[in-house]
Structure formats: C-alpha cells, structure tokens
Length: 147
Image: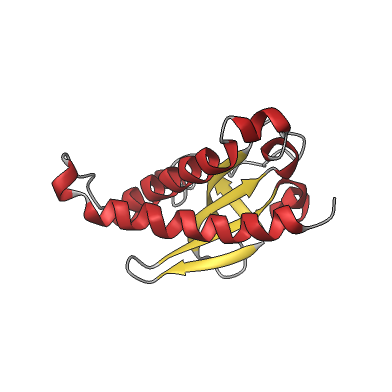
C-alpha cells in the first residue's frame, strides 16, 4: 500500500492491492458516507477480502492510529489483467472511475461544491488527474510484480 497526500486540499489517499485487504482491515476503519465518520451510531465497515470480482474498490477510510481521514483504493490485478478486461480498457477506465470516487469523497469531506459547467470545474479536473496519476503509479508497481 502506498500513501499520497494531496496538498492543495489536504487529504490522504491510500492505494493498495485486493490481496492486502486482511491486513489493512486491522489498520483502518472504512465507511460508505463521510457523515458516518463522526457519527457515534455508525459502525465502520469490514472490507471483505473475498469481494474480489471488481477491478477496483474505493472506500472512505480513517487510519486507526493517526486518525487521518481520506480515501482508499484497492486494485485487483487478477481482474484488471484478464485478457477480456484489457481489450475493454479496464485498467484505464478503472483508474479514472476510482479517481472520480475519491474526488467526490474529498469534495464532500472538504465542503467543495461540484461545478455545474465545464468552464468552472478546473479544480475537479486537476484533482481527477492528480489522483489518477497516484493510482497509476501503484498500478505500475502491481502489474510488474510476479504473481
């Protein structure tokens, strides 16, 4: 797992592999909604290590030790490298898809409104590009590892 910190809108981004879920569950709490993080009635999610039929998964995450809030992406090498997935562009579409989820989480957590038109959304485009680059860096490491 690799940690990135977006300095423009201070926010933690963690990117790891599906096969790391078991260990990561011990270090992080996961949520479906930003509002659940500070809600004492909300129980954290347990990410299922057997939930491996997705190319990628994104969750709102809180580091149990440091209490830092952010988002975590899990990438699934087995699915992303399948021959039929590569033909469909799954690697690139997954990275873009998960980057958009993180921008949405970050925007909600920071109170940043979504821009209604393309000429007002440069900050969102920047964030998607930055986050896609972070996820891509980790993907490059994962794909080069021997299975």
